[in-house]
Image 1 (cartoon, rainbow, N blue to C red):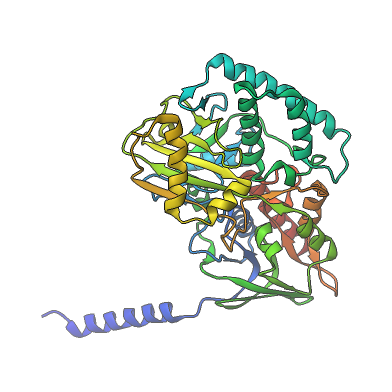
Image 2 (tube, helix red, strand yellow):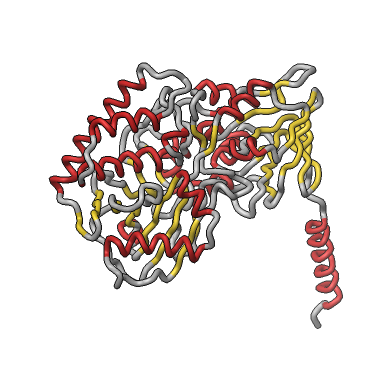
Length: 456
């Protein structure tokens, strides 16, 4: 006869153990608290854990990644935030790509097709525009060499383009190229950018590549085995001689130190209070630097109706304040998907509109190039980074008066009135060589982990 009593006892015992495990309160203290589970936060927490520190990561969203957000709304992994690895050679992310076995796709920035109405520009017209573009940039760089900190990139561009560009198809193509390179690089209008500090960051060699499986394929291995508290919104950070106490909507967490990887936009909004207040140099840097507005609209269609071999395309005869740039994602995913990029004031306008209106705006652009008979999209996804309370913009930029020194100031570890370092800073707005990039954010997290190891 089966021993039912023994089986019942074992079942009850196991049930009791499981109940204790489920009901046990998660610990609220660690050696280090990491604020934010974006690329900087995950790289920092991963490095600290490898060095033997206990770490708790506090993440306000219900997902990891922050502004590196791999979304599957259209049926394939699309990066709706940071998407490219800019310069694959010598990039710290290349090791993560190799370890994860991720397939990459190199974007050919020369494989661009511009349209004047429904007419595709000839190769000779685009080549002429490319040559004239280089002349314009050289003239702007000459002005940059004599610039004052208050000078704007927009004023320099206006001066040069008024002198060198005609109101013809070549001039229109050059003006579009200037918008594309500046608007999608910084997420801002030239009038809001410093001429003196423009283009002062470094670049890595090699292809600029997209990840077929998205940045999530790199983030997930970093997050593995980490204690990440989702939907945990940081409200106050109190630091002193005895350590750090972080108040959140899920209670209070304590540690010997904290690494703040909150985006610059969140710091500018003041939604997290530091006690005592951040040092004056940090506050000045936060005030001086700004956040750009760069958004994406991803559209999946029933079929490809655009040139299948081009990497990007756009119209040059639309309104100058409503420009979009379209990326052919069919090359990456073998599905009829386009991702449109908007920036600056146009992004700000679109963010205030419902998704139906944003889709209609993109379709107006596409129909101007490919005709009224193109199909409606089957699925659409969009971003609103400026209105995202946990981002407040796409990435940092330098307005007139700002410089890379502000990035360096924001990166410094923060001491307490009693002495000692308790708060450490990471994120793309804390690096002077590669601000605004995912690899810059990754490197900043590793740097902050090493600073913790040095001071704590």
